[in-house]
Image 1 (cartoon, rainbow, N blue to C red):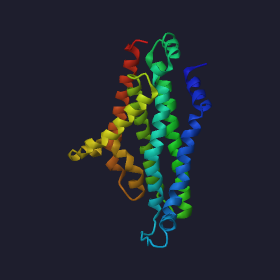
Image 2: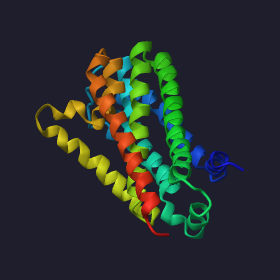
Image 3: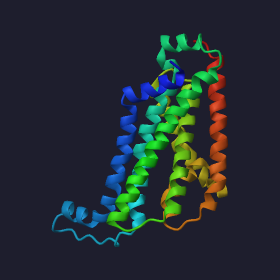
Image 4: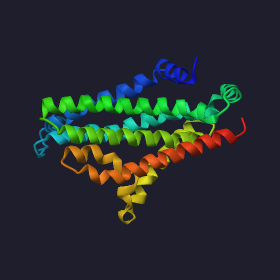
Length: 249
């Protein structure tokens, strides 16, 4: 059995793939519904004494609701799944067994990264398709080009998040510590965007791409951030591979 097949089977049999897919598909359904019926929801929970005045929803609102949940709860689930696969020290005797039988740490780590990151990106894409369909039914059509570009940038950001988990996981022996470390890094990163024009080059700039692009934004404004994200992801993976190869088991 190859390491690639091993990772795929572990993702499926531990129901991690089901959890990832379920979260994104759920928000793909719920997001447009929330945008469409938000006034009624607020009035129902606010009681007769509360008057709710909200603007009429537009198609971009459905995608915005999905994207907001996908980049919060969805990202959390994706990081947990990636940390579970990429925290080699948490495997104990299995890590020693694999490390002594696989000559290159890259061959050991990269299948884990590709499968975990690919699963997160595919689940996000599937959720985006569901949100796109629901939005078209409930609120109206969304530009196909903007939706496709925004989804691709969101998938790239999830690949970056998995690379962060790989780098953090190469230094910790517990899945929980890897999850916390990766989330702290992802939460702190946007703070750098407060420094002048730096924000549009950071990976965190991609988080709002999907909502912006379906609202008429220009994809050119995200190309620099996408390039930086890809480069930093590769650098983080290199650091994770190097650390995995030099640490004592």
